[in-house]
Length: 129
Image 1 (cartoon, rainbow, N blue to C red):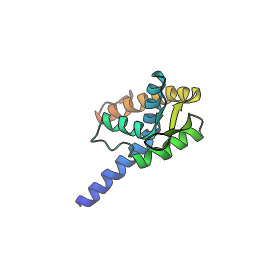
Image 2: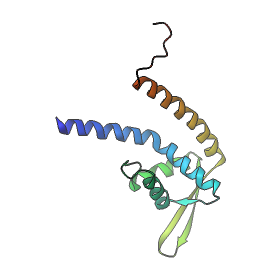
Image 3: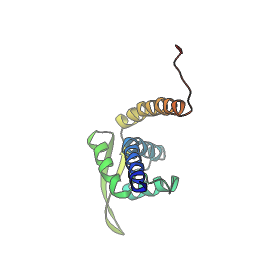
Image 4: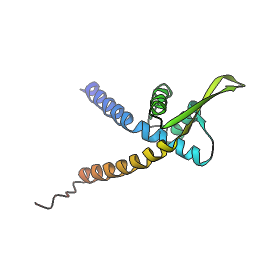
């Protein structure tokens, strides 16, 4: 029974992370864009984990497929630069289309969290009761 509960918890957490990872990455890169600095994957991973080490949001191996997907959707651009301490690094920057998308997704996120919070608190918006 405990294994089933842990499995269900992991599945739920995986689905939440999957659904929010692109939003988180766009937000992180938007902040980097405000600082006029593109970021490479390991920097992004460190920043995310510094915000909540006990929340397994985007392990490094899962980060890169999401970054590639966002780039393929023209929400990010990247460039590769040599590194003095290892292999070349791919630096990511949010695009204008990425900024517009982030703005829309933030509104959707706000609506969704307001809705879910209300349901979880037992608040009803149904006026016909």
